Image (cartoon, rainbow, N blue to C red; front, side, top):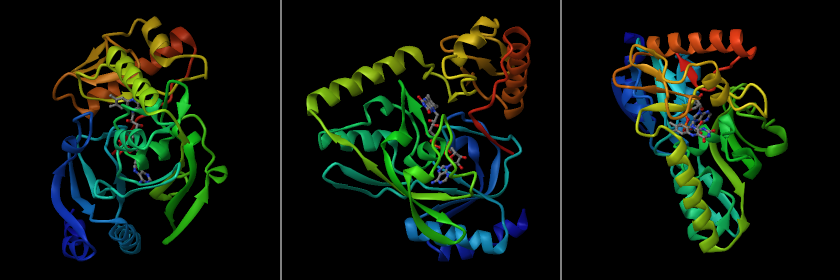
Amino acid sequence: MEKVKELTVDLIKLGCKVTSCEPMRYHTTFRIGGNADLFVIPKDRFAFVKTVNFLEDVGIPYVILGNGSNVLFDDEGYDGVVISTQALKGLRIEGNRVEAEAGVKINELAVTALENSLSGMEKLFGIPGTIGGAVNMNAGSFGLEIGELVESVTVLFEGRVFTIGRENLEFSYRRSNISENRMKIISVNFKLVEGDHLKIKYEMNRYMNLRVENQPIDFPSAGSFFKRPKPDVPVGRIIDEAGLRGYRVGNAMVSKKHAAFIVNLGSASSRDVLKLAEIVREKVKFLKGFDLEMEVIYIG
Ligand SMILES: Cc1cc2nc3c(=O)[nH]c(=O)nc-3n(C[C@H](O)[C@H](O)[C@H](O)COP(=O)(O)OP(=O)(O)OC[C@H]3O[C@@H](n4cnc5c(N)ncnc54)[C@H](O)[C@@H]3O)c2cc1C
């Protein structure tokens, strides 16, 4: 869209690195997605705020991207601006409190916590997302959700910066009210607990090994494609029981290793993935009676 590309100079002046016609498959763990009109990397939190406010003012569609590990971009790409948080890397520790900017990776935070003998992040070690993406989605694993570690979140909301306490963020299974309210995460304050360095390291390795054993990390994916339909019903199990393990549409396949994952066997299209997801939903509804909801966010 020419109108979007005309913003390049303005966005550079606001402190962004800008590329046009950028393939989204380069920026997502699914390795799927056509071109975004503009892909911009604000150099710091101030440039991030200015960029979002500018795009709101001029009325150009935009989307925030962390590590792209929970999204599926359409093959047709994105008519608008994709704002990457990858340069928002600030990390500050005071006692057992850690402030991490949105673009810090979960693994970076976990390793920094380990270096400071702070416990809390062990079960999340290995989730390939950023703090912004993870807190927005309330990512979790092995019975822990990241929202449980959050004290407050600094967000951009309707043009202004606010710090909001956890009690007002409505964390629940793979959800918060952050994107529902169109808030953008700038940074997150975590409260961890002092622990034993060796024990933290041992637990991090243990959970990482469980991930490697159970998840199909040898193929591109966006993690578990569907949400658990009920707290005690693992989604992989019911997809498996519906006979769909290894089921394939084009180059998208229900993982043979972990049926909750849809994997890209190589140059799968977003259409392959969505068609496969629809078949899974219909078959699981028919055979098992559950309505599956996508955990992965489709950006068309
Ligand atoms: C191999 C693999 C394993 C995984 N294992 C797990 C797991 O164990 N548990 C789990 O929960 N997930 C898992 N995931 C999914 C994914 O890694 C997490 O959901 C992760 O937290 C997403 O973070 P991200 O930075 O990649 O977000 P993105 O995919 O970039 O974005 C996700 C959503 O958050 C929004 N967003 C991103 N940054 C911001 C921001 N600063 N402010 C507001 N909104 C923002 C985006 O607009 C988008 O809507 C896995 C994925 C893969 C590929």
